[in-house]
Image 1 (tube, rainbow, N blue to C red):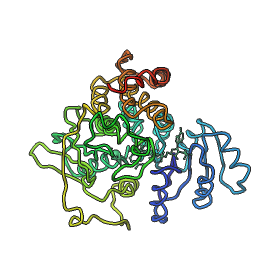
Image 2: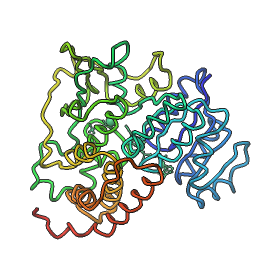
Image 3: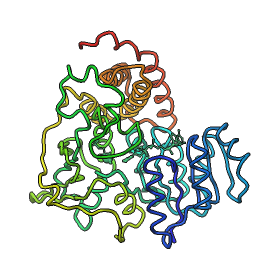
Image 4: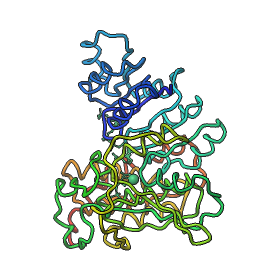
Length: 389
Ligand SMILES: NC(=O)C1=CN([C@@H]2O[C@H](COP(=O)(O)OP(=O)(O)OC[C@H]3O[C@@H](n4cnc5c(N)ncnc54)[C@H](OP(=O)(O)O)[C@@H]3O)[C@@H](O)[C@H]2O)C=CC1
Ligand SMILES: CC(=O)[C@@H](O)[C@H](O)COP(=O)(O)O
Ligand SMILES: [Mn+2]
């Protein structure tokens, strides 16, 4: 029996992780659940999975739940309680399915407590990839990728010599605005942006997919997971999202992992690794798919991808700035405060105004994250007047 904690259990990855657990009740037990403020859904999850501990970061939501709930699960609140969930004695693996920089602190704590990490929260690796990978080595824990592309790469690497990797080919759906011009993007709505062609996901990552910031975050995530140079990571737009990524080896062989777009496979593989287990989800029908196509990404129109490469290649604290500015800009876009095209402008402006620290420690990263959020927030509206940029 593997005991798991799910940080972000009420979200897209969190609920799909619970589906995997439900279908493998003889293999997995849920010992800790955590969410931000969705007390209603968390309560249902507590009733069904009976964890030892449940956490709501939002104090008011936690009070509501504590007032209603009469069972044995301990309910804690606040940011620090996320760490309690991540380091609970009985846990073997922590699924990091919460969004954004908030994933960093509990992930670090979980690694230091010797827990394996099933990593969906890519922002953690973007911000602190070197620190996380070194900590994982030091504490002998596994970082198991949940992100579909990185799981595909992980699967393509099994049984192969890592030093024989020539390049990583990261596939990208292109998002809902693939093929659109700058002019056409001036007036896109929030609803258009949240209409991803292939995946049903949380709002933040869906917006990132539309700007191609998601692929940028994934380039940096791949760099740290698989220890390659940025020049070895190529992004290929593949609108069908059937090939989840590929590895080209030194002899020219290209290994790919294919499947229907369904996160339950990468989630289950991260939890059952090194074994494969039966899944009852729909399987790939190549006759139905019929055509797989590939295009170059348009990084002039979708500048966030180019900015992510720049942040990654600059290194040090710059990816932290990219991430924080993106988080602020995406929130502002989703609240209707800025236009779609301003998202990448906010990121660029924060990066241009940052003095890089070459080897930031965790304390530096917290400071830089806070500086960037503040800078981005104060400059959000600077770009709104120049709609024709
Ligand atoms: N969805 C997908 O298919 C994929 C997602 N990912 C990555 O997985 C992560 C989760 O994405 P997704 O599931 O789509 O996101 P969702 O928005 O659907 O869910 C986020 C979850 O995290 C909780 N949460 C949000 N903010 C905080 C916080 N500050 N502290 C604690 N908990 C918090 C939410 O709680 P509440 O509901 O209470 O607000 C919710 O449970 C992201 O890093 C994303 O990039 C990677 C690949 C695919
Ligand atoms: C399911 C998953 O892993 C997402 O990160 C997905 O890849 C988003 O798709 P695109 O960013 O390629 O549009
Ligand atoms: Mn992905």
